[in-house]
Length: 329
Image 1 (cartoon, rainbow, N blue to C red):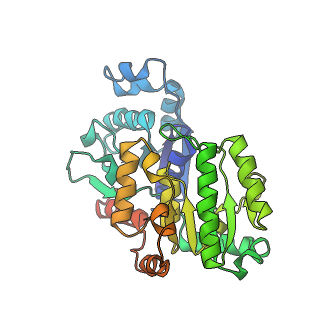
Image 2 (cartoon, one colour):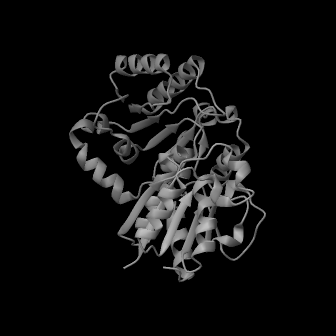
Image 3 (cartoon, rainbow, N blue to C red):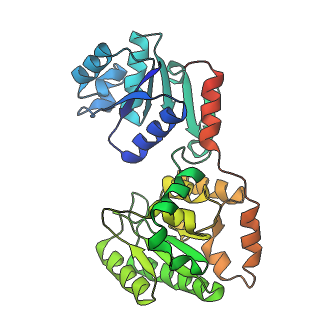
C-alpha cells in the first residue's frame, strides 16, 4: 500500500491542496508534517536546499521512521525540502504543487497553475487552472443535506450566494467597497426577486462585517459571520448566482467549480498580476463574469444562459490523471 508524506508550510490553503491531491490519488495512508522556515533560510538554501528547514531533525526522523513512497508539498520550505529528500532517496517520488522556481528536474511531477506562467517545459510538468482544492458536486450535495433546514426559507426564491473575503497582501476591502458590493447585490435581488445568503471571512475587517451583517439581516436575508457550523459549502451548493470578492485564487476556484453564474466584484482593484491573470483566464473560459457589467445589463437572462454553457471545472482530475500516467504511485 502506498504511503505518502505531506509537507506543509502551515498555510491551510496550501495544505488542503496537498491533502485533496493525495486523497484523490487513492492514497489512504499519509502523514502531514509542518515545516518551519529557518532564519535567513532563503539565503542558506542556495548553499543547500535543505538548510531552509528549521525543524530539520524532526523531518529527518519522520522520514527515517516511515517508509514513504511519495512526498507532496506546496510552498517554498516544503518544495526545497523535497529537493534534498529526493537527492538522498532517489526512489522516493516527489510531487511539487505550484511553481518551484528552481530545481525543476528534482521533482517527478510539477503541478503548476497557469497563472504562475512558468517558462520551464519539461515532461514532468502538468498545468491547471486556479486551485486543485475545490468542492466536488458530491461535497456540495452532502452540505446541502446537512443544512436543509437552515436554507428552507432562502431557497423559496432564486438564491444569490454572497461570498465576501477581505484584506490580503494586494487587496483592501474598505467600507466604501463593502457598501458598493451590497448596493449591487440588492440591485440584483430586486431585478430577479431573489434571496441572499451571505458569508464573511476571518479576513473581513470587523467594522465591515458588522455593517454587512446589519444590512443583510435588515433585508430579511441570512448571513454567516462566525460559529461552529459553517454553511459555506451549502451556500455554494444552493446558489444559482454567486457573487465573490476578487482577492484569492481559492475562493474564485471554489465558486467557479459550481454550476452557478459566478460574478466577481471589484476585479480591477487586485494588485497581484498573478491573480489578475487568473481572473482573466476564468473570464475567457466563460466561467466568470464581471459584476459591474451584469448589474448594468438590461437582460440578465443572457448571462444566466451563458453560465449554463460554461465548461466543467476538472482541474484536480486532470492533475491526477497526469500523475497516474507517469506510473509513480
